[in-house]
Length: 58
Image (cartoon, helix red, strand yellow):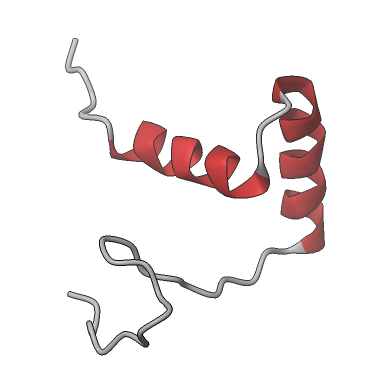
């Protein structure tokens, strides 16, 4: 679990993370994001939620 020693100005219920993206991946994200008009963080959160969805077995 994430260390919860937050500063007074930080939001409760969420944690800031720094992440580095390869340029080619970032280009693909930005291209797709432009079609949806989503904020970058919203797009990334949606992608994470999709990855975490249970996989159906057929």
